[in-house]
Image (cartoon, rainbow, N blue to C red; front, side, top):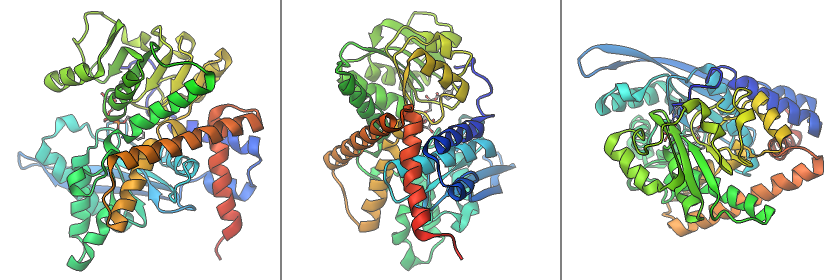
Length: 424
Ligand code: NAD
């Protein structure tokens, strides 16, 4: 488990603000639009009781922050983790606004969750917690208003419970048309073929685009992944299809290292059987030195604030592909850019997830069933397009890729405000 970086939860919102301020200054963002985007639209905090298996009642606190909806309904995941608080929800909701705008989707940004460690609860308890949270949110979410999705420790099964609970609160004739209140559902319950791998696939499409731009091959390149959940595993799966070599993995259960390479499928099997990655290799490895492993590419795919001034100096990789949201803090990024390490920023790198969610939403809304090939093909095109726009904008403004990605996103939102004006 990662233990080095500064507090994982504090300061995430501060990082978003620093990134935003930098981009707003470089592009000379309209002052009124800057004021609007500097703050979240709505912050919903709900306290709700749930009966535990032993008959006791526990009261939980759930968050849903809606940052901005100038381009469409709020969109973003729900996280179940002990680092969830209002600061984290604000930061993650704000990143969603930039991410959906950068991808050219008709969405705004939202995010939320509950401050719990789901490992401490039974499946039946998690179902009741999820359903009661959904009920407590009520019409603060909705298929044309605010559409949650999976994030850290939330699963397709939980999304199915959310959809079912939300639909069950509607009159019978209204139920079916509310299926797209949530995305990331299992395929049998309105989910999209390929949504499971969309984020990891997208991460690798952006890495492929980087390699193509550099005129290099990913074959034989060494990489490490932090987090071996949805994003971490699928990123490793698609990296290995490119012939890249996985030499290190770190997750909440341990840190493993093998300079000769590891097979992601074999590791996944080991993780399923042992509920940990610990013990998969014989090499002892100091978890604090994880990001300093000798490799070409780092894929952070766990939590925020992992690459900071404490460990950025030790990084030997040429590229950081941000599968996670906010894995690099402002100070860490300054050190990396000075060292010439390139960063594919989160709002571009992991946007395959929300793009896949958009396709699921369209599928449900239009009563269609999409094929995996169509999903994967469309995802690739959209991500390659976004990558190209970011690189082009970074050249035009002579700035780093994160700032360029913000500029593309903010330009779209700024235009919407300028065209529509401010009510009344
Ligand atoms: P997940 O719950 O499937 O996996 C999370 C992983 O992080 C697990 O392997 C866990 O062990 C690891 N982890 C937790 N605490 C850790 C710690 N202290 N140190 C090291 N590892 C730790 O979640 P996910 O959906 O894969 O999300 C991972 C990241 O990707 C998050 O930042 C999330 O916001 C981002 N993301 C997810 C999606 C998506 O579609 N799921 C889309 C975009 C971005």
